[in-house]
View (spheres, rainbow, N blue to C red):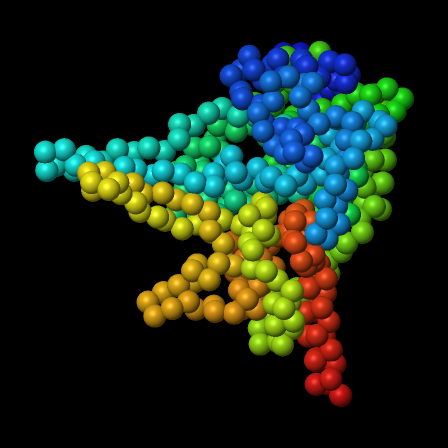
Amino acid sequence: MRASSPPREGVLPRSRLSALFQALQEWGYEIIGPQIRDQAIVYDVLDRAEDLAAGYREEHAPGRYRLTPRAQQKVFASTASIHAWKRFLYPPEIKLYQISLNSSQAQIESLATPVRKRAFLGVRPCDLHAIAVQDRIFTGGVYRDPYYEANRAATLLIAVNCDEPGATCFCGSMGSGPSATHGFDLLLTEILEPEHRFLIESGSAAGEAILSRLPVTPPQEEDRTAAQDLHRQACQKFQRFVDTNELRELMYAQAESEHWEKVARRCFACANCTQVCPTCFCVNFEDSSDVSGATAQRWRRWDSCFHLSFSYIHGGSVRTSVGARYRQWITHKLASWWDQFGTSGCVGCGRCVTWCPAAIDITAEAKALGTLTRSERAHAST
């Protein structure tokens, strides 16, 4: 490597983490990362390193979430926050334009939110994968989303390898974690022993430029060994698994299964799962006007396939039962997403399991449906 080349790796002491904030802010980035609010870890604007949710861990279970302190002052101990990063790239609502009548002439004014340079700090590998999925959907085809595309182009991704998967995580099954391999600008591995530090790897020219401004030292063999050990430990900590072998075909085979109604008896159709999902992208377009009729607006807002109105066409809704709507969601997520976009719609973050008030577990449902299909095949062959 030439002497003038920027570093691709470095070790940053925990005590110098503020230098990363300073470098990002000097480059004009608004920093978004994990912080504590209302007894939960959420993603929002960070002004300084001290704002990070250090010293806390999240406890996840089906339909249950708790935030608890931990003895170690680990900076990135959170797993999949209730927020997904899509809320910044693909906002919950956008006012697309406004039409005003002036002297019998219509004036159309675009009102989309201006794009800001943002650095996402603390992106988990599963969420990194989710962003890549939405990149493919919104920027990789004929029909591109200009709002997402503009937000994405202005965003720096600083990922953090996961060494403590949450109890509802199953990214190991979906090939999206627990460690990141690509898609990041910078990648941090947090190492606690013998001294608290971060092994930092750059993954883009922008990442190299930021890394070159940090007070890092070259990584030693013990740094790389510690990072590898953390990865191995993480792989052994998963409590949930999904057998993805023939999963697409197994889901399709159960399209008329009675199992959907069993799930429906528990499901509230509240849409929590789609709201917290990092890849779901269903929206609705709404028009409104003031009382005088002088102005009208068009909004794009998040919607959900769990809403009865979502599949409404002339004459009524296509999916009138909760069972049909749950079938639509999970079959699209695990099967037909492959047909549309060449990838799974699930990254194994476990948010839908944690934030479902009925504690419905997508991993358990996928296993149940797969077991039904395999049982039917075995019965047919006898």
